[in-house]
Length: 256
Length: 257
Image 1 (cartoon, rainbow over the protein chains, first blue to last red):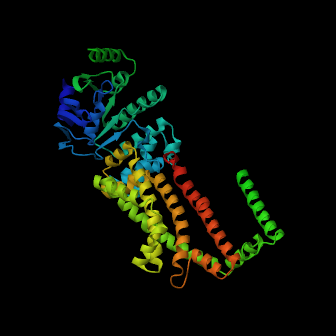
Image 2: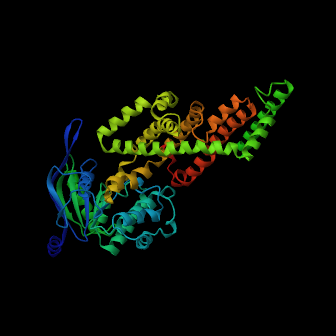
Image 3: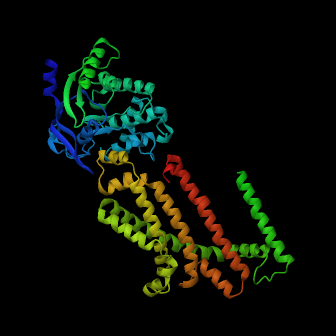
C-alpha cells in the first residue's frame, strides 16, 4: 500500500479516459478506448497486449505523434500537445538512426538541436552515454556498419543523453534475435538501475513484460481497453517463483 | 582496374583505326582530319589557353543555371511536401515541362532575354529544374516515417526539419537528380551556344566548335568535340564518383536509388 501511495504522490504521466480513433477507408477506426493509468517517477511501466490491441497507438499519442479523440494526456502537469524531447521514443525499427551521421554524431545531434548544448559539452555528454551502452569503440562508425542490437543501443544512448522526463520504448527489441534480445533486456535493467529514468515500455511478449515492468497494464484487443494493471514484484529477475506466478496471471487475463 | 585497362586498349585501338583510315584512304582533312592532327590541335589549343577559356565560359553558365535551377527545385519541392496544393502544382508543372526539350525554348529565350548570357542561363534552368525537382520530391516522399518521427521527437519543425532530416535523408535521390540535371545541362549548353553565338567578349565551347567549322578549322572542331566528351567523362567519373564515395557510399544509403 505504501508503495502505491508514494507512486501517486510523485506521479509523472497521467493518461485519463483516453480514446484514440482515426479515419480509415472503411470509416472511423477506434484503436484505444477509455484508457486510464498513470506512471510514477522512476517507474518501469509496461503496456502488454496482443498484436493490434492499440498499444503502439497509445504510445504514439503519449509521444505526441497522434492526437486523442477523447480524454487527456498530462506529463508533469502539462497536457501533451505534440512531440517533444521531454518524451523520447526508442522505436522498433532500425532505421531510427540518421544514416548520414556516425554513432557519436547521432547521439550529439539532438543534444545540439533540442538541448542547445555547445559542441564540446554535447560531445562529452554523448561520449558518456555511448560508453554506458558499451559502444566506445564504435563512436566513429556509421549506422549501416552496426548490428541490429548495436543500433538499438545507440538509439537508447541517444534517448537517455537527452535526459527526457521519460523514455518511451515501442517494442525496441522485437526485431532482434532471441539471444541479443535477452542481453538487451539485461542491459536495459542495468541502465535503469543506474539512471532510474521513468520507462514506458510496449511489448507483446509476456516474458519481457514480467521481466521489465514494476507494473504491467494488460490491454484487451480491438479496441484496446484496460483489462487490468498488475503489480509485479518479479521485475528485474529472470525465472523467479513470483515471475512465473505473474506470467500465469497475465496468461489467464489474456486468455479470458 | 582490369575493366579500365580493357577500355583504354579499346580507346587506343579506335584512335589507331581512325589514323590508319584517314591516311590510307586519303580522306580530306577538311572533312575528317587524322587522329594525330586532332590531338595536336587539341594540345596546342589547350596550351595556348583557347579551349580552357571557352570551356570555362560554358561551365560558368552551366553552374549558374544549375544553382538557380536547384534553388527553384528546392522551393517547389518544399512547397510540394508541405501542402497538397503545392504537390499538385509541382506534378502539373513537371508533367507539362519535363517533356519539352530545352532547345525548343530558345526562340522564346531570345525574345525575352535577347542575345546573351541570360538566355543561356534560362535554357539551362529549364533543362535541370524538372529532373532535379522530380527526384528531390521522390526523395522527400520516400523518407521513412520513423525518421520523420525521430526529427519531430527532437522538436524540429519547418525549415529546421527540412534541413536536418528531409534533405540528408533524401540525399541519394537528390544526388541522382543532380546527375541527371548535369547530363541534360551539358548537352543543352553546347547546343544552345551554337545558336546564341558569342555573348560579349568570351564565348563557350559550342561557339568554339561552330566558329571553327565556319573557318574550316576542322581539326579544332574535332578538338572541341573531344573537349565536350572529356569534360563529360571527368564530371561523371571523377567529380560525381568522389561525391558518392564521400556521401551515399559512406552512409550505406545506396539502396534508395
